[in-house]
Image (cartoon, rainbow, N blue to C red):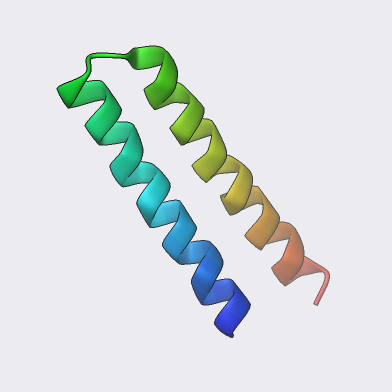
Length: 52
């Protein structure tokens, strides 16, 4: 459970980073990179759950 919680925390922090990059620096490219990182972690968690 600890590893999964850490992955969820990374997703949360990536989302916060994306919002900060978009709102404060007005850099949609960096915001999209952070969103892509969050999506990659979501996929990783999904695959991890399906594989047991």
